[in-house]
Length: 81
Image 1 (cartoon, rainbow, N blue to C red):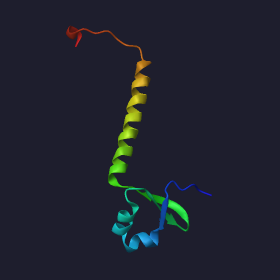
Image 2 (tube, rainbow, N blue to C red; image 1 turned 180 degrees about the vertical axis):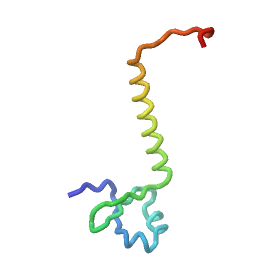
Image 3 (tube, rainbow, N blue to C red; image 1 turned 135 degrees about the vertical axis):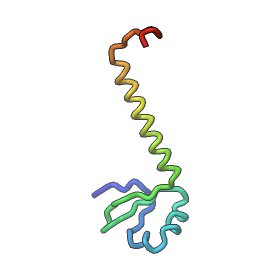
């Protein structure tokens, strides 16, 4: 059985009937969209999605910094540039 990562669920058929009502009733919480009783998508508020993308980007940048700290540094002067 697949885990559902939302407290609210709705079928695709119900979502098609009135998507804006579903968004309103969700009160900013994620909603799992089910197809044949299996989660196929999640409906999340735009602010939540944007926050998730920023956090993922931050994690990527942290890892990039950690990786580059392991690299050998090269001393240069302004004249070398």
